[in-house]
Length: 346
Ligand code: NAP
Image (cartoon, rainbow, N blue to C red; front, side, top):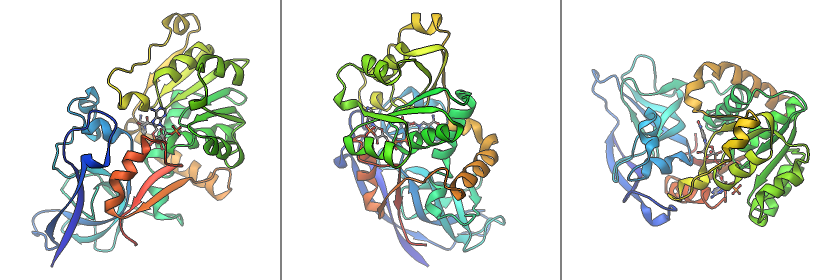
């Protein structure tokens, strides 16, 4: 049997703010009859993750492209891999059978042919919607958990600042910090998002960075006693302002620098004198290095979801054709929580 597989690719490298016109929807026919010796699996994609780092893969050059197997460069015209959840429709791999629900590295398309050695695991949804396993119970969740608990080493009562705080990773960092008993302030890009942080997610305070001409004094206002932990999702000016406001022995987890992804010239230049004299620890990290924590992360997060100590925040659009706008809109701040595209109903 053959099916038509529609998938998204880039038309050209993207070295600036991404636009819809950088992408194209292609289709090809795909046989669902596999060679018995192939060890391959064909997955019908159900949900795929939309993540800012994909833009760095789409550039003609980014130093990130050599950092990890997940960050390799994407060539125009080729299909694009991304984390997702799907259903096995054909398998010659003894570990998977038709009908299995799986999570792993799929494609921004309707089907994925997973080669031997590809990242694919059977998924037990544990009573949660499948989309949760792409976001809050997937890599975004692990990023927030590992970055906050392992890198920031938080203590109850500490003062925590989170940027891109209503995004996929940021909202969870803030919620984990609140459960621990920290004082949490987030920044985000609109009045409506500020209200959601305070009223829906229980942040102690929040502000719209677009309305603040002097970020250093803004942070002084929100943290008159200084910041103990900064969870950095944006880099740039915000990182510089946070460093100026850090307390002695403060910790900064550099999770992402999205404000620098679309602007080659933009680089945070935090005061190194502050870093030294305040003994600030600044550490970058990749969630993929913390798979050893996945079990702990999953059981903690599932417990918090069941007891409603934390809330899932998802932003789901439908259909493979909506993938380009889903990615483009991340860079316009138009997502609320984890951006996911539902490719097909289960
Ligand atoms: P996200 O926060 O859900 O979406 C991106 C958000 O960033 C937007 O909603 C927007 O919200 C904000 N933003 C966009 N352009 C901006 C700019 N120029 N300046 C300031 N804010 C901007 O995305 P995510 O998946 O949770 O990722 C957040 C960060 O973590 C990214 O930098 C990403 O690359 C990084 N990350 C790292 C790892 C890792 O392993 N280290 C894993 C996952 C993600 P506003 O309304 O607030 O502007």
